[in-house]
Image (tube, rainbow, N blue to C red; front, side, top):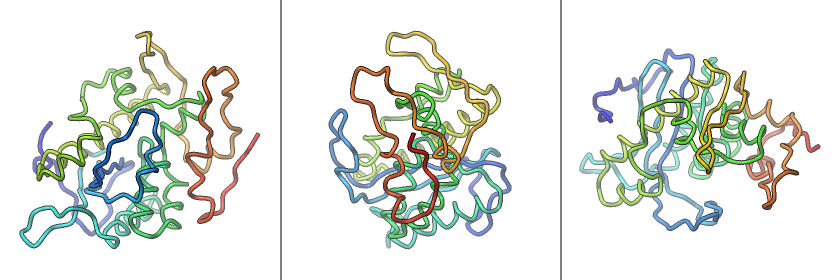
Length: 259
Protein backbone atom coordinates (compact mmCIF):
# COMPACT_ATOMS: atom_id res chain seq x y z
CA UNK A 1 0.00 0.00 0.00
CA UNK A 2 1.39 3.41 -0.94
CA UNK A 3 1.45 6.09 1.70
CA UNK A 4 -1.21 8.83 1.57
CA UNK A 5 1.49 11.32 0.58
CA UNK A 6 1.54 9.63 -2.79
CA UNK A 7 -2.22 9.85 -3.15
CA UNK A 8 -3.83 12.96 -4.67
CA UNK A 9 -4.95 14.96 -1.61
CA UNK A 10 -8.16 16.93 -1.95
CA UNK A 11 -8.18 20.68 -1.51
CA UNK A 12 -9.73 21.47 1.91
CA UNK A 13 -12.37 23.85 0.57
CA UNK A 14 -14.27 22.57 -2.48
CA UNK A 15 -16.15 19.34 -2.91
CA UNK A 16 -14.40 16.77 -5.09
CA UNK A 17 -15.36 16.46 -8.75
CA UNK A 18 -16.53 12.92 -8.26
CA UNK A 19 -19.60 10.81 -8.83
CA UNK A 20 -19.05 8.74 -5.71
CA UNK A 21 -16.92 8.72 -2.56
CA UNK A 22 -16.35 6.25 0.25
CA UNK A 23 -15.70 7.15 3.88
CA UNK A 24 -14.11 5.29 6.79
CA UNK A 25 -12.72 6.18 10.22
CA UNK A 26 -10.44 4.79 12.89
CA UNK A 27 -10.86 5.12 16.63
CA UNK A 28 -8.40 6.60 19.09
CA UNK A 29 -10.15 4.78 21.95
CA UNK A 30 -8.31 1.59 22.92
CA UNK A 31 -10.34 -1.33 24.32
CA UNK A 32 -10.70 -5.08 23.92
CA UNK A 33 -13.84 -6.19 22.09
CA UNK A 34 -14.99 -9.67 23.01
CA UNK A 35 -16.36 -12.00 20.29
CA UNK A 36 -19.97 -11.11 19.61
CA UNK A 37 -19.89 -8.12 21.94
CA UNK A 38 -21.71 -4.92 20.99
CA UNK A 39 -19.01 -2.33 20.29
CA UNK A 40 -21.29 0.46 21.53
CA UNK A 41 -20.91 -0.88 25.07
CA UNK A 42 -17.49 0.80 24.96
CA UNK A 43 -18.80 4.21 23.83
CA UNK A 44 -18.31 7.15 23.88
CA UNK A 45 -15.47 6.90 21.38
CA UNK A 46 -12.63 9.23 20.54
CA UNK A 47 -11.89 9.35 16.79
CA UNK A 48 -8.30 9.28 15.55
CA UNK A 49 -8.83 9.99 11.85
CA UNK A 50 -11.51 10.06 9.15
CA UNK A 51 -10.75 9.56 5.46
CA UNK A 52 -12.53 9.56 2.14
CA UNK A 53 -11.60 8.16 -1.26
CA UNK A 54 -13.36 9.14 -4.47
CA UNK A 55 -14.04 7.20 -7.65
CA UNK A 56 -11.30 9.37 -9.21
CA UNK A 57 -8.68 7.95 -6.83
CA UNK A 58 -8.47 11.05 -4.64
CA UNK A 59 -7.94 10.67 -0.89
CA UNK A 60 -8.39 13.10 1.98
CA UNK A 61 -7.80 12.76 5.73
CA UNK A 62 -9.21 14.66 8.69
CA UNK A 63 -7.19 14.58 11.93
CA UNK A 64 -6.08 17.08 14.53
CA UNK A 65 -2.55 18.49 14.55
CA UNK A 66 -0.72 18.96 17.82
CA UNK A 67 1.51 21.92 18.70
CA UNK A 68 4.47 19.96 17.33
CA UNK A 69 2.75 19.53 13.97
CA UNK A 70 2.23 15.82 14.48
CA UNK A 71 -1.20 14.18 14.61
CA UNK A 72 -2.96 14.76 17.91
CA UNK A 73 -4.72 12.09 19.95
CA UNK A 74 -8.22 12.60 18.58
CA UNK A 75 -10.53 14.78 16.50
CA UNK A 76 -12.13 17.75 18.17
CA UNK A 77 -15.90 18.12 18.37
CA UNK A 78 -15.79 20.87 15.73
CA UNK A 79 -13.69 18.86 13.31
CA UNK A 80 -15.98 15.83 13.60
CA UNK A 81 -18.87 18.12 12.71
CA UNK A 82 -16.89 19.55 9.79
CA UNK A 83 -16.60 16.02 8.39
CA UNK A 84 -20.34 15.45 8.71
CA UNK A 85 -21.02 18.81 7.05
CA UNK A 86 -18.68 17.90 4.19
CA UNK A 87 -20.43 14.55 3.67
CA UNK A 88 -23.91 16.10 3.76
CA UNK A 89 -22.90 18.81 1.32
CA UNK A 90 -21.45 16.15 -0.98
CA UNK A 91 -24.77 14.28 -0.88
CA UNK A 92 -26.72 17.45 -1.64
CA UNK A 93 -24.45 18.08 -4.63
CA UNK A 94 -25.30 14.67 -6.09
CA UNK A 95 -22.23 12.71 -4.95
CA UNK A 96 -23.10 9.21 -3.73
CA UNK A 97 -21.50 8.81 -0.30
CA UNK A 98 -20.77 5.17 0.57
CA UNK A 99 -19.51 3.31 3.63
CA UNK A 100 -19.34 -0.37 4.59
CA UNK A 101 -21.35 -0.64 7.83
CA UNK A 102 -21.43 3.14 7.87
CA UNK A 103 -24.98 3.54 9.17
CA UNK A 104 -24.55 1.65 12.42
CA UNK A 105 -20.94 2.65 13.06
CA UNK A 106 -19.00 5.33 11.13
CA UNK A 107 -21.71 7.96 10.71
CA UNK A 108 -23.13 7.30 14.16
CA UNK A 109 -19.63 7.63 15.67
CA UNK A 110 -19.19 10.96 13.89
CA UNK A 111 -22.55 12.08 15.22
CA UNK A 112 -21.63 11.15 18.79
CA UNK A 113 -18.17 12.76 18.54
CA UNK A 114 -19.56 15.96 17.02
CA UNK A 115 -22.56 16.26 19.31
CA UNK A 116 -24.76 16.59 16.20
CA UNK A 117 -26.75 13.38 15.83
CA UNK A 118 -29.37 15.22 13.78
CA UNK A 119 -26.84 15.98 11.05
CA UNK A 120 -25.44 12.46 11.35
CA UNK A 121 -28.92 11.02 10.83
CA UNK A 122 -29.38 13.14 7.70
CA UNK A 123 -26.11 11.75 6.31
CA UNK A 124 -26.97 8.18 7.34
CA UNK A 125 -30.39 8.22 5.66
CA UNK A 126 -28.87 9.19 2.30
CA UNK A 127 -25.84 6.92 2.72
CA UNK A 128 -25.20 3.96 0.45
CA UNK A 129 -24.22 1.15 2.82
CA UNK A 130 -23.82 -2.14 0.90
CA UNK A 131 -23.46 -4.14 4.10
CA UNK A 132 -26.81 -2.86 5.36
CA UNK A 133 -28.32 -3.71 1.99
CA UNK A 134 -26.84 -7.21 2.16
CA UNK A 135 -28.29 -7.62 5.66
CA UNK A 136 -31.63 -6.36 4.37
CA UNK A 137 -31.61 -9.10 1.73
CA UNK A 138 -30.06 -11.99 3.66
CA UNK A 139 -30.44 -11.22 7.37
CA UNK A 140 -26.79 -11.60 8.42
CA UNK A 141 -23.60 -9.55 8.30
CA UNK A 142 -20.73 -9.82 5.84
CA UNK A 143 -17.26 -8.29 6.13
CA UNK A 144 -15.66 -6.01 3.56
CA UNK A 145 -12.55 -8.19 3.17
CA UNK A 146 -14.62 -11.29 2.41
CA UNK A 147 -16.58 -9.48 -0.27
CA UNK A 148 -13.44 -7.99 -1.80
CA UNK A 149 -11.91 -11.46 -2.03
CA UNK A 150 -15.12 -12.91 -3.46
CA UNK A 151 -15.23 -10.19 -6.13
CA UNK A 152 -11.61 -10.86 -7.11
CA UNK A 153 -10.22 -7.57 -5.78
CA UNK A 154 -6.57 -8.16 -4.93
CA UNK A 155 -6.10 -5.21 -2.57
CA UNK A 156 -5.79 -6.42 1.03
CA UNK A 157 -6.42 -4.73 4.37
CA UNK A 158 -3.16 -3.63 6.03
CA UNK A 159 -4.20 -4.74 9.52
CA UNK A 160 -7.16 -5.68 11.65
CA UNK A 161 -9.30 -2.68 12.56
CA UNK A 162 -8.89 -3.35 16.28
CA UNK A 163 -5.13 -2.76 15.93
CA UNK A 164 -5.48 0.77 14.53
CA UNK A 165 -6.19 2.54 17.88
CA UNK A 166 -3.20 0.78 19.45
CA UNK A 167 -0.88 1.81 16.60
CA UNK A 168 -2.18 5.40 16.77
CA UNK A 169 -1.52 5.49 20.52
CA UNK A 170 2.03 4.21 19.90
CA UNK A 171 2.64 7.11 17.53
CA UNK A 172 2.58 5.01 14.37
CA UNK A 173 0.38 7.61 12.71
CA UNK A 174 1.50 7.02 9.13
CA UNK A 175 0.65 3.33 9.41
CA UNK A 176 -2.90 4.21 10.50
CA UNK A 177 -3.22 6.91 7.83
CA UNK A 178 -2.20 4.32 5.23
CA UNK A 179 -4.64 1.82 6.70
CA UNK A 180 -7.71 4.07 6.73
CA UNK A 181 -6.91 5.33 3.22
CA UNK A 182 -6.56 1.75 2.04
CA UNK A 183 -9.91 0.79 3.55
CA UNK A 184 -11.58 3.73 1.80
CA UNK A 185 -10.03 2.72 -1.51
CA UNK A 186 -11.01 -0.91 -0.91
CA UNK A 187 -14.60 0.13 -0.17
CA UNK A 188 -14.62 2.22 -3.33
CA UNK A 189 -13.32 -0.73 -5.38
CA UNK A 190 -15.95 -3.06 -3.90
CA UNK A 191 -18.79 -0.61 -4.53
CA UNK A 192 -17.63 -0.09 -8.12
CA UNK A 193 -17.49 -3.86 -8.71
CA UNK A 194 -20.93 -4.43 -7.20
CA UNK A 195 -22.39 -1.71 -9.43
CA UNK A 196 -20.71 -3.23 -12.48
CA UNK A 197 -21.61 -6.88 -11.81
CA UNK A 198 -24.89 -6.41 -9.94
CA UNK A 199 -23.94 -9.05 -7.32
CA UNK A 200 -22.13 -9.48 -4.01
CA UNK A 201 -19.84 -12.51 -3.89
CA UNK A 202 -18.08 -14.20 -0.97
CA UNK A 203 -16.99 -17.59 0.34
CA UNK A 204 -19.00 -19.27 3.06
CA UNK A 205 -17.52 -20.57 6.32
CA UNK A 206 -17.17 -23.93 4.54
CA UNK A 207 -15.22 -22.29 1.71
CA UNK A 208 -17.99 -22.54 -0.84
CA UNK A 209 -18.52 -19.65 -3.30
CA UNK A 210 -21.77 -17.76 -2.82
CA UNK A 211 -23.40 -14.71 -4.30
CA UNK A 212 -26.36 -12.42 -3.74
CA UNK A 213 -27.93 -10.34 -6.54
CA UNK A 214 -27.68 -6.60 -5.93
CA UNK A 215 -28.66 -4.96 -9.20
CA UNK A 216 -28.97 -1.49 -7.65
CA UNK A 217 -27.35 -0.03 -4.57
CA UNK A 218 -29.95 1.73 -2.45
CA UNK A 219 -29.82 4.43 0.19
CA UNK A 220 -30.70 3.72 3.81
CA UNK A 221 -33.93 5.68 3.42
CA UNK A 222 -34.97 3.38 0.55
CA UNK A 223 -33.97 0.20 2.38
CA UNK A 224 -36.04 1.03 5.45
CA UNK A 225 -39.23 1.21 3.37
CA UNK A 226 -38.77 -2.50 2.61
CA UNK A 227 -39.97 -5.23 4.99
CA UNK A 228 -37.33 -6.56 7.41
CA UNK A 229 -35.28 -9.54 6.20
CA UNK A 230 -36.67 -13.05 6.57
CA UNK A 231 -34.61 -14.70 9.31
CA UNK A 232 -37.05 -17.55 10.06
CA UNK A 233 -34.55 -20.06 8.65
CA UNK A 234 -31.83 -19.17 11.18
CA UNK A 235 -31.14 -21.53 14.09
CA UNK A 236 -29.32 -18.95 16.20
CA UNK A 237 -30.96 -15.78 17.46
CA UNK A 238 -30.97 -13.42 14.44
CA UNK A 239 -29.96 -9.78 14.49
CA UNK A 240 -32.76 -7.24 14.31
CA UNK A 241 -32.69 -4.52 11.69
CA UNK A 242 -33.40 -1.92 14.39
CA UNK A 243 -29.79 -2.21 15.57
CA UNK A 244 -28.77 -0.22 12.49
CA UNK A 245 -31.20 2.68 12.77
CA UNK A 246 -32.42 2.91 16.40
CA UNK A 247 -29.96 5.70 17.13
CA UNK A 248 -31.53 7.88 14.42
CA UNK A 249 -35.12 7.71 15.65
CA UNK A 250 -35.03 10.75 17.99
CA UNK A 251 -33.19 12.88 15.43
CA UNK A 252 -34.86 12.42 12.02
CA UNK A 253 -38.18 11.62 10.38
CA UNK A 254 -38.21 8.62 8.05
CA UNK A 255 -40.48 5.74 7.11
CA UNK A 256 -39.73 2.26 8.44
CA UNK A 257 -41.66 -0.79 7.29
CA UNK A 258 -41.97 -3.16 10.23
CA UNK A 259 -43.55 -6.19 8.56
